[in-house]
Image (cartoon, rainbow, N blue to C red; front, side, top):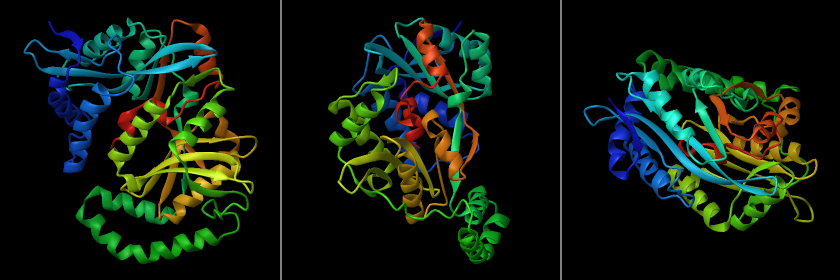
Length: 366
């Protein structure tokens, strides 16, 4: 019989190999991606500022001593109202295809949920994990299982998918089709009501922001929400350094949008991926400035040459996303569990301040 035990740094190479086998079975990862995985399974899981001996990542060890299952767990301090709580954030839940998947998966989840955490969060669950989650009587939250995306150069985006396929016909076609795609994208952008026609907002100026400013913005925006993350300068600086290093500092941006009096109207964090998709990791605004901040984020991505910009669809973005013509699609399932029904009710009604920034570090690594 196999067994569940705590993850140890000595398991990291086995877990990296398992990750490649489960998620990249038919893909040859470049050295940079392999190194990013190694860094994640060592530094992010074992050397983060929230490390908690009671909330550890887990492995399922087979009869032969091999790691055939893994559940990443990162402890995150949060507030529910004025009460400090502990959250266990799940990451990289995976089982070797050759193992007894449902048994291994259920054993890992059951063991973790018996921990002392007040809240369990899982972002990135596939349909199989959601099925197991529901079978265990845990809720799935469709409200947080959506992404918004805004095409900036739709023809070139479609062309890039052909290039990424790696097929010879796709590569040859992309060489021929690139100039016409550029022309079509320009024509689409000039159409009066085109969603790709994003002009610079008349109000607000974007500028780089400092860590202390970001901390103040998060605390100010989150204070009206029942469930919110708890940061201090040390933990936020670690997170900024980790994400900037994982993505390349030139690809990670923290931008404050300021008004005429230099007061901050809002902010956004985004990364420029190598496939020319810009991903908004966190966005916030004060008063009724979300429309301005969102348009700044999209316009910034356009100036960088991105083909598309996307982000997690958060409750405070619904109206603005609709108004500018962005589209929505289903994202991996957002899963949660708590012994306190009031915490689950706050999640269900969207009375939370949570973003990709808090959900899952692995998605910010690759």
